[in-house]
Image (tube, rainbow, N blue to C red; front, side, top):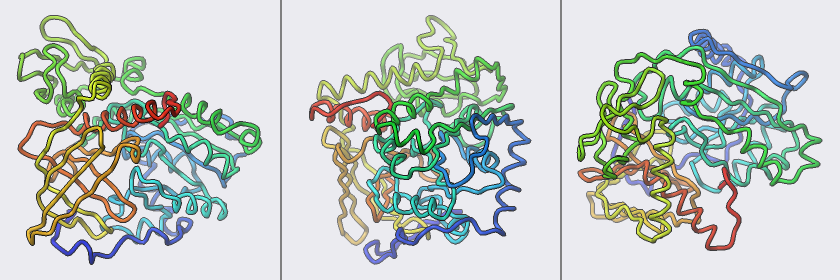
Length: 431
């Protein structure tokens, strides 16, 4: 159980981000394989390797990210070698020693961190596999999230083979919007591909590398499910779907969607949809506006984009509870506060029980995306986490209408709008 405690956050020890990563200790490799391979068997995962003949570490491994099962597939794909994985700070809670000995590298999400580059270069110098999930979060609806524009330049900098690992079915099996249990999806699939040799990287520009990476990272788990006719007969398969489909396409009401069993419905206009065993939506009466779940999600994005363009986007002032995560020991309760997200970015102010005020501001240019959680650790509900290089705040709105999904979409669209107004290029799939 992850603990929350009260302490002086200013005096709290900070996570040592400078400490260099090590190669996975030999005695921990069997543990990693023992945890990974039974999952591969359970889901009858088919791993296809393309161009990997003769490819050995060191290399850069880039994977898409839909569920924790991604790690099992990655461990199986790189066998008998073991990668050094970039892991978010909360992954280290209560197990920092174990993760460091496995070789994990800590990262605070969506911060510009030159230390990470140094650590990855160190891994490569040691002859290892530098493993990154460049989308930097679980996919919200089983489709591609923006890739950082710096990715192409990083590939050129390291001058080692670049390998991609794109998995299919993990979101269907364990969707981010309902992680209480897996759905037993099988078979799942993954393709491990040598995308660039060092010679390719020498010849190509960073922009050309980025273009190929964006193309390689195109995936849609719901489309994959339909094409493969993967049946999910879970009786509560729609529960949590309102986390990502927060706006009704019939009456346009926001934050009034609810779910139960296999149904998604609007509390305002009472329209309802059934989620089929093959991941599609069917209106129980009238027109089916969106049968494909990612289409509904992208419709919401377009609505947010219009608000941003019109200058009307704002979350308003939301009451929040804020917890700090300066290290791997657990969360420090800061107190109650106010969150506002608008065209200035994020601003959170929080006051402790002792009357001390803390403020975190994240202007629009500083974040091309943000990380959100649904029912985070089944504790306080949905939250957005905001990071500096020394701290992470988990910000939980309460007693108000809100959607952290809308905040995530708005973060991306505000960033793109800033880029356009600044005369900077906006390339599809990159941020």
